[in-house]
Image (cartoon, rainbow, N blue to C red; front, top):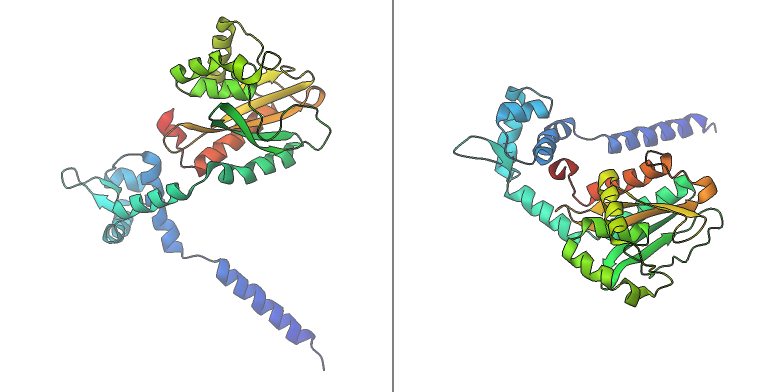
Length: 278
């Protein structure tokens, strides 16, 4: 019995069926652009402006908005006629935010960054005693550092520490900066001139990155990038570390851009909208 035609037909059916499963409903995707436009804009919008942002004509946008209004995804202000996200959209957003775990969300991004660059990647949070490493992905080559999961980082003496120092409230940072020696000991938290510290923090805010060159660990360079949540607060630090000879430490180099891009992707996953906080 010749089963080649049967097998071929079965394969065609599977591929065809798989394609149908992957195919979405175009009208939902089109209308969804209106919701995305409202979220990106960050404030109520008139119909004409909203339709333009969603790349459609007002007459085409209006029926979608009527349906979304019935579902509570969109609401229309009675005074201005402007459209805004409705109670259902807000409730869905709150549920999503309550379920988000920054470290869990960031881990696959950090792992991908380590794989793509070949360098080591660390995730850190602001703990009870200051910046603390909570995850570490090793480089593909031997990299000798003292960083481990649970390591406390010096605020002034490390790229990771300066990252948090630049974006957390200054009063909190000043208190912890004074405690650096007590927390970590003089071998790790080496004294740094206060003026030099302020210069470095200004540099962090300027570039959106913190950098360390062969200090505190000789032969190791790093870039640390901030991860922000939906409210614009720093919740994580992402640090890319590598051996000096194979690590481009220029502010616009591939390592700097890779760390910054990865942190921005995680921030977006946590609900951060950079245009709202720029």
